[in-house]
Image (cartoon, rainbow, N blue to C red):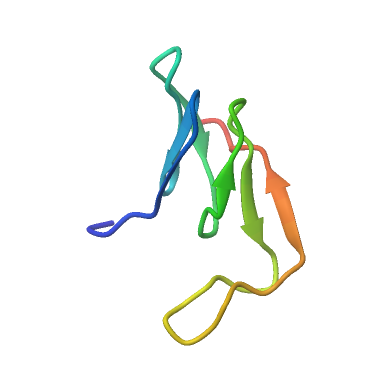
Length: 70
């Protein structure tokens, strides 16, 4: 993706669609949907009803997803 979504906390980051454990320098897997937040253990917050766009906000419910291993 030429314009990936990037979300970062102390120990993890999402460079969509990849989820990375920054403390170990390891890929945790991939995630579907636009990341809204990420936890230090790699779970990613995404909206189930629809992603945010230039015209609208993300539509809930919001859920924490565990990355799908590569």
